[in-house]
Image (cartoon, rainbow over all chains, first blue to last red; front, side, top):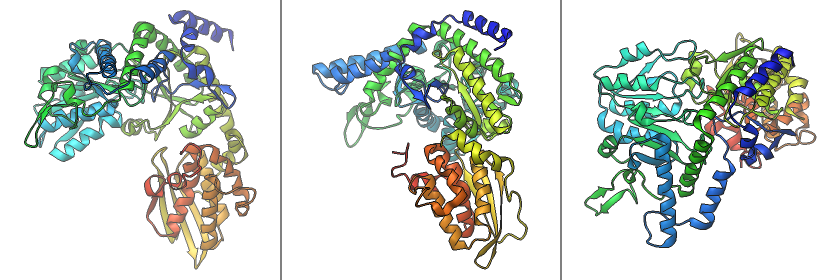
Length: 422
Length: 165
């Protein structure tokens, strides 16, 4: 390490407001797992993040002491479980800053939330010749449901283009809005490039024309403080396993008025008020959208994860991750032949890259030899990959428990890959 | 053998200088192979002289494991009969999915046994097998093959396969 690098690194360490070692102690998987005889360097957080002990413990406590079906029994355990489940809903409400508790629907993941809006809202309001506006940055989860709807209704998708840095062309977006636009569906943060989109301005422009906006918040929630009232979006979907909670649980926020007017997505128990063979009266929101027994432990675990993030502090998380991203951008950017894909001015801690002409899968396999986990592939965002002329990238995505040492390990390992292929 | 050794010993050489790479004039059989997971996309073209593979060529875009596997495959099957080539296809599949022991059951694969280590890289098995599946498709005169769905070598050979329980 040169003196300049050492001093840069020291600056970075001073710049972070987090006691990362103390945070890492909360994550057993980071302490315990070794890969190829080395400590795990987990840089695949955008795919799925790890759970802290507090979340694991909360799930075990529920399963050990509190489990019964919710919203049904009058007995002790059912009431305990219902209180814990509805408590998690209130935590989620605060986490997203929703106006009302009933605007928070538990889903199975972000994809499920988007599909709920497609079925409950899209199928009701979108007709032949109508348009849905997406962006070039979308994950397949925010493309395919709308494509299915367009096929069914004879509607069409309009796509907001991006510049070479991976930033949306906002003027183009405004031009795409017209009287046929029925919905804008955009990602808050690009999973493949890390771009943070100006959601508030995008929502305001749509609302000026009376168009509602759905935000895919899967990649934003791990990094940013989410305030759905400030954004004024109509729907906001997130998933639990990317914000240090379990898989199989997500949250969809929707404005109460819209949710009330929408059709249920799934039929079954818990979503009804009364059922006869002639007619069913649906339950009130949010229960109208939560048919069947939900993943109760997962919802409670997600609540614990949101509380954990809140305790660490969104501002501190953002500051630390920003420092990691800047350091990683600098170290990888300094390696000749490494091409960074996605260089937006506003970015979350996601770094997609290409090493010379080495296929990302080869890069990923060799990084794994050094215990480093990155995602390689098209990141379920093939249109973005096509836009940048690559079939796939290697992607390092940082969480607040990652360290500057891990950034250095990544850069060193990328150099080794290059040498091997040289 | 760990991944680094696998790369060092064979893959890098064939990745840099793939044998029989490019177009084949007068091809009698041709198939396209696609691995949508990582974007490997190759074509295998053959010229059969009766029952014998007179010439073979591969081209396309792929990772190093796929390219090296394709390159070594062309060397291995050139001049072989269709039946012998199909036996190599089956042997390669068996070896890379951990069903055949390279030291005993898959000895007939010769140099190709260096790919045995791929079985320890479950996500990369498809990369190594794609050229062989494409060759098989070309011999069967199918238009294309893929590593997904029905033709998925990992799905088909999932029993006892690490990471696919």
